[in-house]
Image (cartoon, rainbow over all chains, first blue to last red):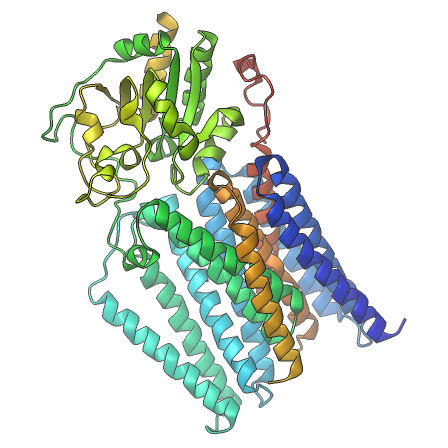
Length: 480
Length: 109
């Protein structure tokens, strides 16, 4: 077969792979087909990678021994590490793992662009290649260091609270100027206006890489732990764009298509997440908001408004004799890793003939949909999980609403103007006949304001950690 | 700009539009698996790592290609496996009320 024929077949394989990515994402529309969608996408990946490998082997110049070793050992090492961590990670730690995978993807995109630039630095890089290299390198290195910091914050390696570096903004501006000057110099060099030796242009690129890495760190450090999902999503989109830029640099269609797909999806997802929290993406990036995993709030009853405290036994009686119960799980449940306890309580109530449903706010947990994953992991039947719009009318007919570690998403203050969370979509928990709130303390939620729900006469507060509170409730319900 | 570059730009713009259209239809409950799935797709940069490995001819290039391969492979393999783990949990149980706790633990890896 001639070389042109082989390249045509490989190109087709890349296009089929790209089509699998699109169709796979489309199948992720519904829980029923989602898994097949992911498998289709994986099949596309296997096809694209195999076709590339065959292309490299049958090239006239062949695949050198060193290159073969690099490909096989690199794949084995990285693939093995990815497989092991993905298999063993606890589902509650999953967001930081996604962040880590995002970091290495961004790093790989930056390295591909850097390597190609070094090869061309002898004078082969034209203006457009230089621009794509710089964009790929900047996006890739920002997402590499930024995702590592974001993952570190979620893992607790770096404090979740916003870290404000004195003079941080000036530093950020200085870095941006350095990167910009470096970029302009490189473009002028490519245009022939500026005479740059290959060493000089490689050093300039190194400067841009360093600026990108530092920018990633200074961008994420001042952002609170609770905002990390938005940040990771944004960085995910950025990695996609970096991969597309790397695709332009090496002239590969499948990198361009897949990277652009991810760039678009990540952007949409980032906006949706920020909107659900009633914030803008810019507002999130400005940082200094959100306290992350603040385990220590104000002591029980510390806040001014009078609240009614309820014992586990009293709460259990209410639950056991209810017709219908809606459970509202929140961030606190995810932090306490109490998803198995909540499922146990729900099954116990169902055995007593109580109708149990879960009300899932779009941003419950640490990422949109994270709560669904956590509850699904604990074997909560998927049909019991109701989205906000679907469940809200049901609160009017519900006997007891059990709020576990959720705060701002239940605050009726969002319905009135003049509150920081005004206009945020909330769960109509206060419409239930009776409300039980399991919460560690009267500490504030993410928005830092009082929750009017807690001072509602219908509300009983059960002050406990989500896990302990649910265990106590389960024991008490068994005793009823 | 070369014709090749113009074609690549057209591909880029169309792929962005397809991405917007495909993604905007996904319900919020699946956003985390979706994000993870999209995350594994940008692991396609692995192909880039293979191409630069094949052209490498000096120690620096070997090193860059090796790290890019390792990173890309970790992104791809880990990404798809963790997404699959998430999605397999969304399976439906036909008789939720009749599912006793004896079944717990099933479906976890």
